[in-house]
Image (tube, rainbow, N blue to C red; front, top):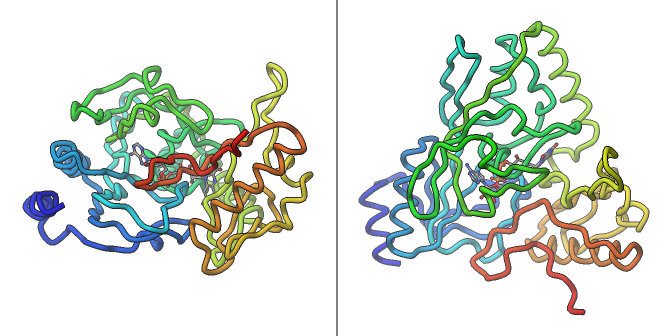
Length: 321
Ligand SMILES: Cc1cc2nc3c(=O)[nH]c(=O)nc-3n(C[C@H](O)[C@H](O)[C@H](O)COP(=O)(O)OP(=O)(O)OC[C@H]3O[C@@H](n4cnc5c(N)ncnc54)[C@H](O)[C@@H]3O)c2cc1C
């Protein structure tokens, strides 16, 4: 790791951190330290950092807002880049706005709505960055952020940068081809908005945020939002089946493991009730999935991404048959 350290210091100087805890940088507030850490809002720095790791064959991890990840208790060896913040570039005559992928989704929703461009209000209150939201297929109220995307500039695993039309991103409910291909979103161009009254959009944002605040855990119970994906619709045109409903029927709200517990008001949210480790959360999630499988024969898929140097990349490991 000496070569990695030297090259990172040469490229990033004092902004390179070593052994920094990642827990405070994630919404779950668990996980060990990053061996090397860079926090940036500049896409060119993400590209430069990625190039160093690629040339040396060193592990590279990317975090946005850290609102949908679980970091391993041992931390992350190699380089972790936190791509948070960035700029918005407007093309009002075309009705387009380009956001660096590190821009907070919240900021984009507010800025677009303040111009009287509707309607991104469904995404109000979703934590994290626009890059994390696009890559993870985020959305709410039956809508996905990708519906407002025209193109995205992505960094591929081989180091090339490409402008891709939205169809090439393969974004779907809580997943995307770009995430599966290991691509990094550098910036996103949004468009196709319809003129709407800015005050009405602002009022809608306020109402959505109040509704969400009533459903989600308070700040003293850190979480990563819904832990499992909702189930596919039972028939075409129907809605997805809420994983929370199925978990509730299985009595999940009573479950806990070490410092991790199921939120008392929502059976699909795991909270860090105090001193939880990633191992506690993994163990609880696995028991929840096992309970649903035993009762309904369905295996829940995690929505939260597990970041680790270990070969297991999923939060939930299936029980051996
Ligand atoms: C209280 C709460 C409520 C939530 N409500 C919702 C909701 O209503 N709807 C919903 O969909 N989600 C929800 N979430 C989950 C989460 O907020 C979203 O998934 C969010 O879009 C994740 O963005 P992030 O920047 O925090 O990603 P992170 O958690 O930092 O990363 C998640 C994954 O995306 C990857 N990633 C991050 N940035 C990029 C990038 N630029 N390019 C490529 N990959 C990237 C990471 O490597 C990681 O694999 C909620 C979470 C919390 C804590």
